[in-house]
Length: 193
Image 1 (tube, rainbow, N blue to C red):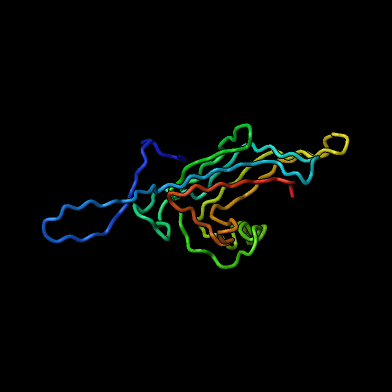
Image 2: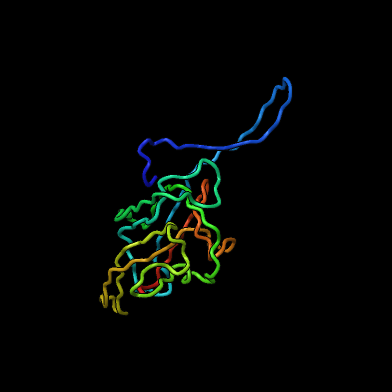
């Protein structure tokens, strides 16, 4: 988990039933975790064989410190925490658990670049993303070589990725991290631009 000092995970569930008189009743209650599991797999693309990206670290921003005991359609107002400069192991994959951070789908984004669109170079807030939506910044080194294998350019770079379900079955405006869900982000880096 991003932070769970007790090493225990709370589970919750609920059921509605009614009984009158003396009744021998068995009720199944489906339990769920208030956490989501988030996995990132970072790899180099195949469109430019002269470019390689090596991820070195990542930071997670706006991680909730509390969540509702039961499924929620909106995040609780409260504290959020950032986890910065976490190392990425060789191979480029990392994962973490975080509490639910749910929002209504945002109108406006129609493609991936809209999700990360900033107001301006001076105002680095996001145009569409909710103010406390969780996002990850992946840091690393980009190396571009010429056709003979000589290094042309080395650059420190970073990539910002808001969490949510923007897969083919999701929505570009989905910035939610829902409980009891495993999110996998396969990030392919083709260049520095």
